[in-house]
Image 1 (cartoon, one colour):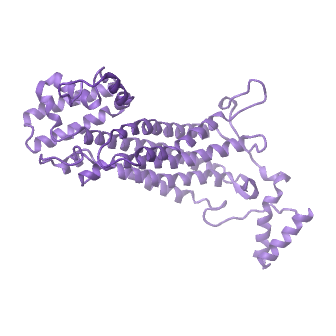
Image 2: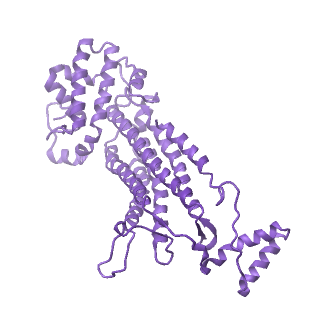
Image 3: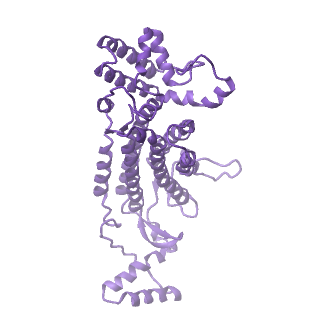
Length: 430
């Protein structure tokens, strides 16, 4: 059953290949398709293509379908091509020919665009909330453990003093950078394509400003061709934002795997949050963070997959774009799952104290002692040479005094300033 039926049915093998997994994925768009239709019919009544009586019949019928969707009682029937067809067939079956009128001034092209824009808008809000939750967890841990020192590394070699406050806080602020990417994707998404029809507008006097307000978009995609060109561009923006968050989360997962290892032993988790070995009875493996790292690495490939799928498409709608759902729909779920799991695991993290008391980390204080000499008037290069020679001769004895006060350092984490940055970004999604 196709809305475009002209008296013939496509070959079943052709239909199976072209539809693919779209029916299952479309179920996630169902409520948005109804919301788009509700806005559209109100606009059609405003411009005289529907009567007030017809609107009063169609509106409650669409809301009834929306309730069925929210209750989980809705499905795309066998033989029905997509979500748009299913909803229109339901309306026609319940209301008769009046149900066919909801498509006036619309194409499935702008219909699916609206559905996707509304869907991604909600998904980006969901991701933003999960980022905000993990951010708060990291900031709490940063303040709780701000006085617990740990070695900092460059080239994975012992470098300078750091702290757990600095480490947790770094990932918190890194998430604010990712939120800028997420917000950019949200702003690209939050534009109304309804009324662009197949990509070249309509001879009906559509009121696109009205549907923009009804659907709470920031603005229309004004140019109808540009509206259609946003298919693919929107997904690229969403993919880039997801990949940015995945990069931060993947780095955090790697750090945790490293710090949990026996060679470091900086952090630990309760036994029930780790897994064992079938042969080595002592093993407590960080499988959660290894899986998280793997998922996040895979999510960072999504922008490239979207780019390759859309790279050489000609102007206008092309069926290739349908495959973007297969890429992006699971990705938004997966990044939220990873963010939520990171937040859950970090509630139970245990942090080791007095790490830098171990002689293994004596050299982490060399820069502190060079700086101390420089503050007392010794030229920096002379101070550097003096401490360097002590190290070479095996005579270096660290003072272990840490006094960092500048903005963003161990002694001045700027937690509140970073929190204000995140709060400002989160407010943009509300």
